[in-house]
Image 1: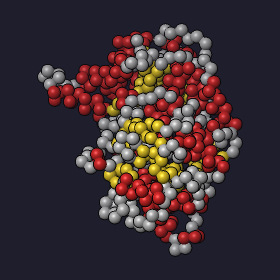
Image 2: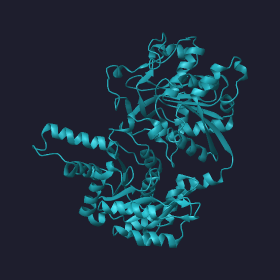
Image 3: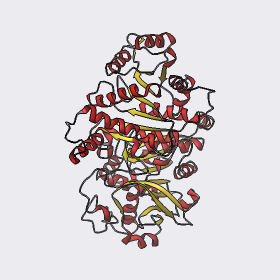
Image 4: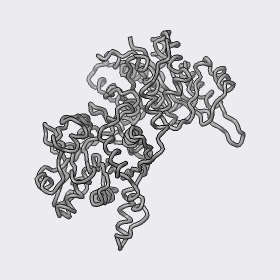
Length: 542
């Protein structure tokens, strides 16, 4: 029978519950257990697909086409598991399911209440993966938000019930914050104590506490927390600031987090497993001294907006014995500076930053803002033979730039940006033309891509059929396919069922490749994506 680990958070948000959940999964995997990780978010949105990246960061996409929280990316990158729509849940989906049942009459006229109907639905969703064919030993469930939030109450009640019903087969790991007051020169445990009291007030006694801190905590402070919070000293673990999130599993293992979980569940601990390949990756990161400079050309000036891309670049650089220096290049500012300069040959400012990069990534996104800046960056990369990787909308900007400046179609555009363009080289997908709702209606999830045998991408993948994840509404307009081929931009990857152009490349250039799909969703710590690996290798040589 599957055992359950619940991960909750207190004091403040953004402490890193996702990283801790992924680290627990990694450590249990190393002991030979089969695990999966799921995220329950208290917001009422059905999924994060319609959320502003400035508020919520990147929207991650699973292989089966679910738009999810970015933490699922951490789960996959750390553990190598493939998540599905069952691994991501929101209050919106929970309530939608209960309301649909009520409308069908499934409750036989009963009054629908938060307890038991909403909490029962939460429990059903938590336990759903226990019936999967994979036969999981552990199901790790991260609860989004912070203890004390009104919207978290039904989730906490569901956890309380499950802990009571399952006994030793369920543990609660609570992540809290221990702040340092510089004026007093002291670390303060009171916020943690109050956070635990909030949890206890909900009927949940945490089994393990993880204390997030910028400074090392001595045993006296840990003992104080243990005494006030009714937790054994060996179960009070600190999570200090580290040079990389990928060092967290090793730090947790060093302090015996996985062993403490097993002991709480009455499972023999055995020997501590070696994390050989993981430690090799960390050693490569520590010993790398030279830099490779990559510019991300986008419009969301936020660390988490392009999280999977930046992590994929980091993975690839590490295996090439480099540190990656990622510089965000604001596409709007590129456009503004270019428009303001009367003498385009004397461009400076953000253009100098663009020119200083070893390679450029034209980022994905939606909407008109920053579009012309991305097109200018693609033009610069093409004309100066700078390694350039266009992803989703970034690939479409490469296509538009080529049409304008090589094919001579000065009005070329996407109908997303200008529905009156006379050269709609990027157009709305046929199956999208009758779609009226925004959420969950794009081309989502993994689709096959057939690679041209003699293409650059086929050489990179070392195969001619791959499967990659999508998130888009617009596509390359095949009416213009022959013109692109005749002038040097090759459609080197096609979907075999629909002829959708998945990849374009210019073989004459060092590395000029655009993908309609999102390869960053499939890069993991131990298996970096081949496109990112080859892109970084070329950028290093440039």
